[in-house]
Amino acid sequence: MSSTAKGSVTVSLDGSNKSATLPLIQGSIGPDVFDIRKLYGELGVFTFDPGYGGTAACESAITYIDGDEGVLLYRGYPIEQLAEKSNFLEVSYLLLYGELPTKEQLAKFDRGVTLHTMLHEQLRTFYNGFRRDAHPMAILCGVVGALSAFYHDSLDISDAKQREIAAFRLIAKVPTIAAWAYKYSIGQPFVYPRNDLSYAENFLYMLNAVPAEEWKPNPVLSRAMDRILVLHADHEQNASTSTVRLAGSTGANPFACIAAGIAALWGPAHGGANEAVLKMLDEIGSVENIPAFIEKVKDKNSGVKLMGFGHRVYKNFDPRAKIMQATCHEVLKELGIKDEPLLDLAMELERIALSDDYFVSRKLYPNVDFYSGIILKAMGIPTHMFTVLFAVARTVGWVSQWKEMIEEPGQRIGRPRQIYTGATRRDVTPLESRG
Ligand code: ACO
Image (cartoon, rainbow, N blue to C red; front, side, top):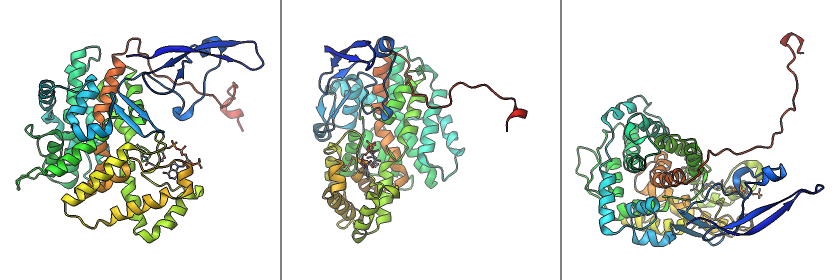
């Protein structure tokens, strides 16, 4: 399904008799968009949109967000239903191919992905080159980029079969790379993947198992991990996905593109927020300190933000945050944690912020990361692994978006313009004459 013509918009330049008629187009849902591609050619002007808040950079049939209504759809299916009725591999199939799989399709896909869970043994040696205290995102970025040096038979992006194998390899190997980054940081032996376990179970197994003990999956924790993966699997043209698309638009290989996405995800304004939420809760310390902290957040000079709050697109609520909050309670109950001070603190912080005009008037609500950190902490996953986990989940979204872009007829290199504000043309004075 592609966008359709709906009408036109005429733009005229004040003080000149020039005007241009631009097509007005519509997608399957969402606001109409006017197509400015001919604007520069016809009027000699272009548009200015730092942060791209008013600009669509591509057509995509994968994910739809209505930020005002708090709606998130993967291929048309509401996130709440997918979180309840499907699992991460089903969602991966959906994102990649556009439809939910039948039982047979799922079994074949599962096998196709799990066949690739192991890493080339030579990749193990990479880990020894990192300091033990390296941030696992640094390791993930490096090792995923290095996959390009190991899998030469899936680098030809013009070959549909190779694109599919690269997609399977990335979805299958990123959890192994991520778990090994963690094991390396704590000095434990690497745990090889087990293909008889589900995707989420296998990831928990590689993170938590040790050769000296038998490891058994806990269904509640596996389900919670699966849900975290489903909720983070894609989120249309966010910063990291746009980075993957931009890198991919040059024809770079998929492993390099996903490494670029991982780098973009790392920042605290994006995937790093779940880690930042826990640091913030630790700093606040207790409920009585919340009012003073809120005052600091409201003071623009302090540079302090309420982490896990606010979103570029969601201006009502983040539907993922609601599911995350419920999952948080399930996990704490399963683990017998009756009293989790961080959860009490988070809930009180949320309550106070949501009744404060600063947050209400700016439409700032908890985002997906507000509760995910508490769940992960309860599951024994250390803070510096939180963004890594996000990257594991988002890999399928990045790959689906990359594949969609490569398969689009007439795909062009991404190349934004700028408003130049530097010096105008001038001549170079010889060094001896400069003073
Ligand atoms: N705490 C305090 N004030 C905030 C916050 C916050 N978390 N978020 C936005 N604001 C304020 C801004 O200062 C601005 O105020 P102003 O109008 O008085 O200048 C107003 O709300 C609008 O915010 P913008 O900066 O325009 O929002 P933008 O869309 O650019 O930023 C972002 C969105 C980056 C997510 C921001 O809300 C933020 O930094 N939040 C905290 C980090 C976070 O949780 N990120 C995770 C995002 S979800 C994800 O990546 C999975």
